[in-house]
Image (cartoon, rainbow, N blue to C red; front, side, top):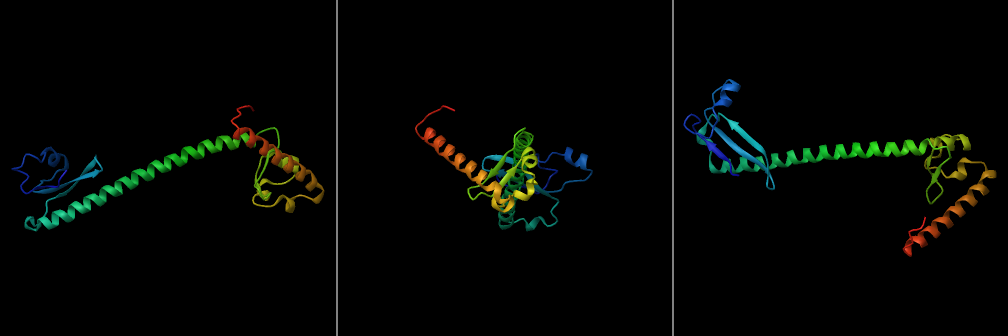
Length: 178
C-alpha cells in the first residue's frame, strides 16, 4: 500500500519487462503509487523514466502519495456518478411505464394539489374536460374551468377529502381492509 520507487528497472525484479516489449520503449526507473479507496484497490498510478532521479526525495514521495489519494477520490466520484446516472435512468424508465399506464386509462384522471392546482391530467381527462393537460399544470382549476363547473369540482374535492380522512383513520387503527 506504500508508494514504490524503482531506481533501476533492469536490476529490480518488481518491474515486469514484458510491458516494455508491448509498449516499445525501455523503462529505466519508475514510481508506483497504489490507488486505494478504504480497503479496495483501484489500481496503480505510475510515473516512468523520471529524468532526475536525485529529485525523488522523501518530501516528493509524500506529495505524490497525496496526489495518488486525491486521484483515488476522483475515481470514486466518477464511479458514484456513473451509478447515480444508471439509477436515474432506471427510475425514469419505471416512471415512464407508470405514466404510460395512467395516461392510457379509459377513465379521466385529474390530480390536484392541496391548493387545487393541477398536477396531472391524463389523455382521457383531456377529452372529457376539453383542456390541454399542459394548461392545467400549476394552475388553480378555478382559473381554468368556467364557473358552472366549480360546484361539481367542489363536491368532488369535498368527497375526496372525506374519503382520504376515512382511509387515514382506517390505517391509523391498523385496519388492512380495502
